[in-house]
Length: 259
Ligand SMILES: C[S@@+](CC[C@H](N)C(=O)[O-])C[C@H]1O[C@@H](n2cnc3c(N)ncnc32)[C@H](O)[C@@H]1O
Image 1: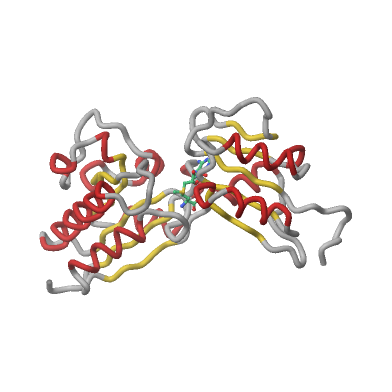
Image 2: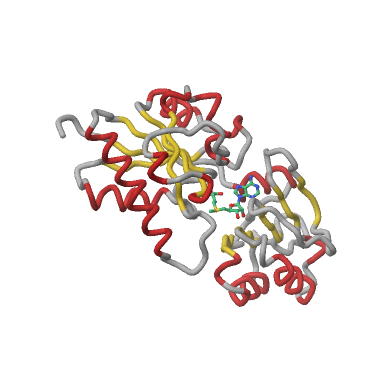
């Protein structure tokens, strides 16, 4: 390779196209190619190598960046986004295939390659796995990231909840890490945010009830997207979309009480 190629993970926020940074928009506009993740089962990996098949369903990142990126610069990369159980064969194959497609683009002359990812690229994003896989094939490819607004921040803003004050810690955890972690954080002095809670919502609800925190908790479903719902946790609704975030504010009894 002659000039250096750079792969940049660009955080595009939780869904609202207005929640991209100026830097993210500039990078997306200037990139030779913009890759977006899609569910592996929605498109055949080999058929998508570098192409955007008509009719295939757009992923969230793609829908968010569409107004900033012309279709001829957009490329879908299938990932096993819904796999459970760690490093599955399907996941590994998808990372390897995606890295191969990126490296192929570099070999064809692309120098500025962006990967659009929801929220922030350094928070539970596929980008880290893609970057590692690309660097394993081509260590000379530079890797960079542009921070994005997280779902946690959007839910705090939309529900009017300060995330932390004074000496309070802030915990962000995935429900997939197990209920004990959630229970411990909830018993602590700070705000707790839970990602990936959709299938485990009933367990989370039970723990909220057990610790008397249900009345304070807020839930953000599909924020910035069609079908968005933001508000108190409804004790009876268990059927949540994957894009759901739970926020339990720290206990605060008076202004500045945690200073
Ligand atoms: C793989 S993580 C991605 C997190 C993302 N990188 C971030 O910085 O916010 C996916 C989880 O993020 C949360 N999430 C992302 N976008 C969301 C949205 N628009 N509405 C509600 N929750 C969202 C959900 O908890 C979802 O299960």
